[in-house]
Structure formats: structure tokens, C-alpha cells
Image 1 (cartoon, helix red, strand yellow):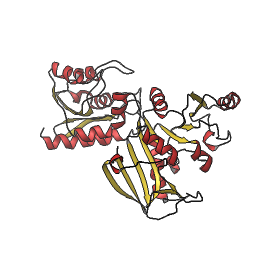
Image 2: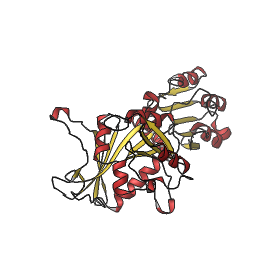
Image 3: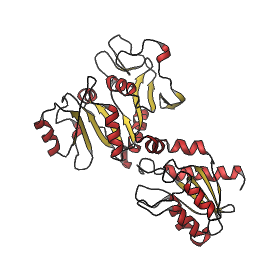
Image 4: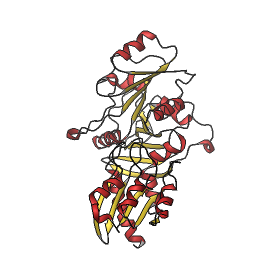
Length: 366
């Protein structure tokens, strides 16, 4: 199989893997295609944690046609027993002749071992097919496995001059309906949304996913409130029978308040807070320990500044409206004292600009 053909089938595998975005955490996104010549005899993707892996799905569909065929898979096949048996055993037993791998699995239990086992069994293995594309698709999984921390996206809707509200606090709506729909699609794909008390007090948001007939999936809602200011009747605390809601507060929070929240089904985390509120790194690590690997921050200027200062942000996603707000009292997207010298500025890498309705979506990495 020439390089161009390998890449062609890998793109198909990537498309399959993308169908499960937001559904496989804490597992990776994986797609697999089995071909004989120019014909697909089986294909599949990992639907969600605990379900069969992509290789197994593809092998089941291929049946006896897998013997002597080629497999193209976005991630190195696993070789250890977890919730499912090792994929390497199934690939070997099925009689696959060649395996083309997109990226090496960063999990120490697999890393390189899966490919070595396949080669030991006489299967030809080629790695690195569209590696960058495969790694980008699994950036959440890679960060989680390597650091034990979630991948954090900082999202904001801003004016062209960097404001998130006027000097009177008016912020609805800076961006248009297309941008807001894109945000709901993003919420459908992340594991948790984090908001601070200021945002909840000002906007009283639901922080849910609303995608019309599709509905979407509500991520875990996380409220940071070290001062105990958020009212118990806030909309963010609704539907505890269906959704998981985590309320993070400080040690000095009144016990009566916390017990009332717990009775409604809200999960309460008590942290030792400092001058800047609850420790964001500790909260992020606890979220990762709970299997929440992709976190979306939808906060105000104060939380945005704290997240950047704590260096927990991996990616920024700003929706920029072609409007000018102005005013010394208007709220900027990032609060706090800021930097004193340009050399200390945080630089965004690999930025991409995409039109979304009348607005622009700017995304990039820290």
C-alpha cells in the first residue's frame, strides 16, 4: 500500500473516530478500517468507555474476510487487559496481514508494546500515518495520560476591543446565534463546564447543552464559590436527578448551606482557599481523578485571569463579534493586574480563524 493510499484510509479512520467526540472519556477516540485491495471489508470506532474498541468492531464486521487483509487504525492497538481484552490478541487471531498505525499510544501500559507484539506475531506494522492529525484528535487523552490533568479550554465571547460586557454589565448578546450554537456543540463534547460565582450571580446561567431536536448531552457542571455567594435557587443547580453538579467552596462555608445543597443532589467539594479563591490546579486534578478529562471554562474576567495565572489552560476559544464597546468601566475578557512588560505576554500558537455567522472564532494553544 503506497503512502497516499495509507493516508486516504487513515482519513477515513479519523472520520469514524470523530463520531464519538465527547463520549469516550477517559478513553481515547479511535477509528479502524480493514481493507482488502481497494475494498473496505470492515470498519468501526470506539463508541464509549467500556464498549468494544474500534479494532474489535471492525474485525466483527469483517469476519473471515479479515484474514490476509490490512488494518488501518488511528491509535496503536492496546495489549493489556482493562474493561475489554487486548486488541492485539484479536488482531493476531483474525489473521490480519499488515497494520498501519496513526499514533503511538502514550499510555505506559501500551506505548510501543502493542506494535512490538504484532510484529513478533509476523504482522507488518507501519506507524506514523498522519501522526499529527491523529495526535490533535486525541489531544485531550494525550494530556490526561501524560500529566494526570484534564485538557482545559478557555472560552469567551468578546467584542473587537476585547470586552465581555458594557460598563453597566450588559452582555447579552455580544455574539450571534450561530456562535452560540457552536458553543452548545462544544458543550456536548466536553466532560465538564467550570464557572465562577461572579458569572452565576450576574447571568444565572444553566450551563446546559441545547441543540434543538438533537438535545445533546449535558456535561458535569462545576461551580466555584469560595465565598458562598451563589443562591441555592440558582438555575445551575437544577436537574440534579439527571445531571451531575459539583459545587466547590472553601473550608469556612456554612455547614447548613452545604447540607442543603447535598440534599438536593449537588456534590460538594470543600477546598482550602487562598486569597484568589479555591486552588484551580487542585480542582482540575480532582476532576481528572473523576474521569473528567476535557474541561471548558466559561467564566468571567476574574476566573479567566486566575486560570491563566495558574497555567491550567491548554487552548483558548474566543468568539469575536465585529462591534466596539469601549469605556473604561467596560469588562475586559481577562481581569486582574495584567502584565507589566510585553515580553511576559502569553502567546497563542497554531491559531486558526474561522467565520461563524457574522462573528469570528479564534482558536489556538498556549
